[in-house]
Image 1 (cartoon, helix red, strand yellow):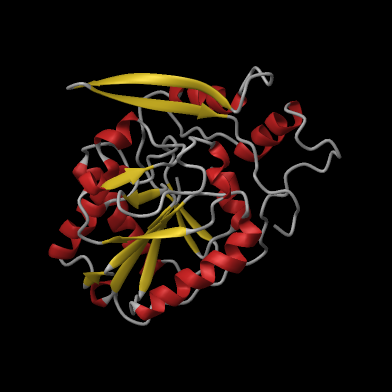
Image 2 (spheres, rainbow over the protein chains, first blue to last red):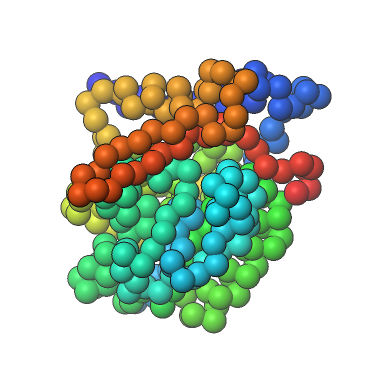
Length: 171
Length: 114
């Protein structure tokens, strides 16, 4: 059977229209880029320090909660902060708060933030080493603020950790 | 979400046609999870054309009923309900339960520059 995909943009546009969110008729302004910045790797992957980001909303139990998390308010989608998860963190010390957190990720959080897999792959020399911290955040609609405020902070931390490449997992 | 990916145009991307929240594969499927990450590592070297999207060959199941459920989840057929559309309680055994909330997909920003 050939692969079958959902066309999410027209579907969600229709959902928003039915919900009356955009009464002016302009609809949600999806990010549409004409080009993409690509920096070639300066060395083979096997010699790289790899960082990881995930939109799973994971945080250590000891870290500050996400905005409005305590009230179980879906407004935490507006929280554009990120958390730093040490690479050898155990899942028993982690809370995942993404809206897409499910029974499956409750059973095996590696499907959202692959802490165990990355450790195994480092030991298997798929790459030189893991970055000391992974970054987690919430997927958000506030992309303007995300680009202006959050991403520069992440980039600064990647540079401090001397990261060669980043793999980002959307959720 | 491939159409969203095409619009955003990240430098390098892999598309996995799995349900939301399963971007690294299926629970406890170590070989699949490892294969997905390995494909991402390979793409760091092999993708040279900006905006390239590689479609991963892995299938969630033999049918696409999960997509129907995903559409229903986001459809929120009753706009009169609160943002927390529904709560699904799953008994994990051992006295543990997992509560999954189904939300309306309401964008949070108020102005385009935001």
